[in-house]
Image (cartoon, rainbow, N blue to C red; front, side, top):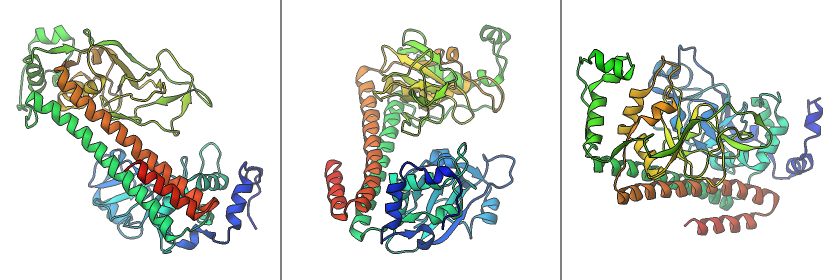
Length: 454
């Protein structure tokens, strides 16, 4: 008998569907198929920036994806004290979020190459039933079945939470080995395409740096340097960092190409930061600083929505993070057909006379990022890159052929990433078909997707 007295549990819109899952003769509890089920914790540290071990929060996990670029850090001593034994992540483990964005799960197929710790909002599951692989468990939790079960079981509507007991009580329906292996193949192929997409982004930057002769270049770092009072007054900057020789050397190299222009001098028709969105139930997806990655924008159903403000993000825009240590100056081309809303930490750049994909690569390259470092203002934790600063970035307007070659690499990366994401959707759909339809239909569906993305 369920120990639930809240009406929402019994009035769940998918109650009939979920009860059918519970009645399935194959159904087990997650508790029954796991050797271990535990949550992490956050060590008492002054910050999560320094250390040899990586620290995972819920923002690092989405369904069947682990976003390594979002990892934080903790000292090795903190890892060894709290995670090296009882909470050690190994091959066959699954990390599953249990707060806010519940049941977003990622399976580890191999032992991590780094020491990984995780916070109290994440559960570690170690399945030990040969009928349920780590990939299948993660795909099941991310499927519409797993999400509906988790949403019914959750408590605290404003900040959803799923206890370890509640997670363990969720039913799971194992499938045959052939279906399980097929779902795993879709997952592996998704990872392969995502890796290739990353390689394409790296190739794009290498093409730029090779053309500028800066692939192996190291900026000068003298122990001391000077700037005249006239130079200081002219730019109204009193921070020594602005006048560091490494920045001046970069500018000289760009000027020597005879094709360098200030971004705001004829290369753009709009450079403007977004506004604080008024979030709602309907509207356009909001893009914030977490969504603007290096040369790619994260857009999914997880993005919150809002009504349009003064400016709307359009296909072909370049987005730049205007705030935040570690994220400031990061740029990405917006390649989606769907319009979006920028929040007040994202600057829209609408290029003219220069390819937006090439411009994004330039801004993210060491040449672009060094200029960002020079332009930012404010103190630690409150740094800013204002639209007027963005306009002062010196950009090499490379020959058209090179811009096209770099843009093609980024476009290929975008398409590969899209296919990778779709394969994860297909993996979760295969789970649903196998459980609510037939395993034969699931196998046919898997074969169809594998052929489509071969």
